[in-house]
Image 1 (cartoon, helix red, strand yellow):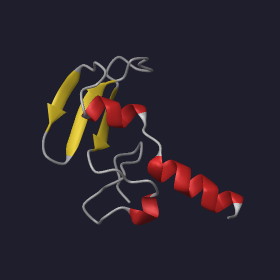
Image 2 (image 1 turned 60 degrees about the vertical axis):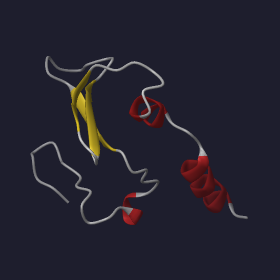
Image 3 (image 1 turned 180 degrees about the vertical axis):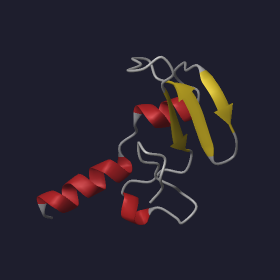
Image 4 (image 1 turned 30 degrees about the vertical axis):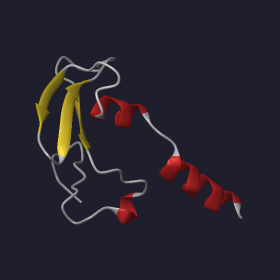
Length: 79
């Protein structure tokens, strides 16, 4: 197995802090939640209003994301 394959496998299998927040195993100041996404305040905000919106379905690599998953850029445009 190549180093790239090992890294991709680890990213897919390892639990993340985001998974723990989604499962409510660790506290977060949730501001929005539905079946697809969870939005919560960042614990170390870099701006007066700083929050994260994460998909509930795990996406290891952007190339594997479904069309319904949107990436928002700083300027508000999407990919």
